[in-house]
Length: 512
Image (cartoon, rainbow, N blue to C red; front, side, top):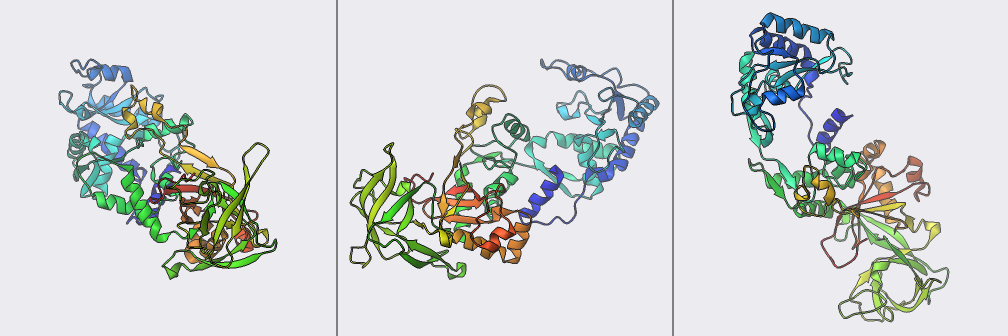
């Protein structure tokens, strides 16, 4: 699964590998070179424990280094012992094959690193054929050589490995590629170390490695971030030998720019507030044509009902008005998006607990009122036409960590765990959207690309801009069948939306 996800992610980014190689393809060749290295007196079988090897390398005190007692054993003896390892005559940890390098080197990667270990675990490609497995330090350079790699690219933490990379290629007399290092790219408010990510998952801070609060590629994909945005972000930064930490806002800007081009606009309310237009008849129904993207006819249009009862987002109403507030308030008028008319709040009706139950408004039907300063979004209450579309959940993601560099928080290697923001995920129930959501999904499902993606349940490709709220995409927890789509109103679907990123505009508005 892990290996397959790498290939899937590469293809998601828009790249098709020329070929796909696995180290296990070369297990026999690697074993033969290990025998050759041992026969040349440049490798030996060691029975030391991990603690003993650490002491031989100077220990925590960084004292003098010294060879283990097996280092100078006869070549024939090491060859025989290595054969026993291969035949499974030792338990895991009882014997290892070490390369005889340079214990006095200033480079710790030359301190007789391990070439082979015993591991009684079935391999995902070779099954139980082997019980000894080559280490990364042994495999990396040799597989590069087998595959005629010209330049082996890796991050700067492998700079010290360059000496051992070249040493091993020379020792077994194979073609030697060039190793080039580049700086690791990091962004603020996250961690990217696999070990740290696993600890976050295992301790329950995140659900999985594709949790949308993380910055793994599967997590960004699940959140709804387009591959185009990631490619543009990386292309802008370029490659450097310096380790750099980039403000996450720069990535967010690329995401917004990309979504601004590809995401259709619809009206939605994360916290809907019921509005009754008192001067309209009970059965009032108009059909209003709305553009999916203003000023871009290629996106097309959709039709929404306009009725006596509708919903607005609660953040678009305030009981106490102020000079710098332009949305709805008692005895104040606003426009409705897509309509050439205004509504004026005449009454606030309350529940028994004092909370607002609904607003009563007067609708200007003849267009005589002055043009309002603000137009707010709305969603009609018209069940027979599938409005509103009810969302099972809206998941509002915020940065997982409180500080830009969570690794600097607290003491020790696990200090970043103290910086986790427990409110980084807010699950909103009861949100609604207009019928454009269903119409767009149905339209997308009719395309060749849509059929392919939805057939694989890649629902994160369905993205929207909820006007004045943010950009959202369907989460993979969504249940959406072909029957739901064909029905048009999605009555049996469970729609779960992830917030991809906020809008730049109207930063004072509470979007969640």
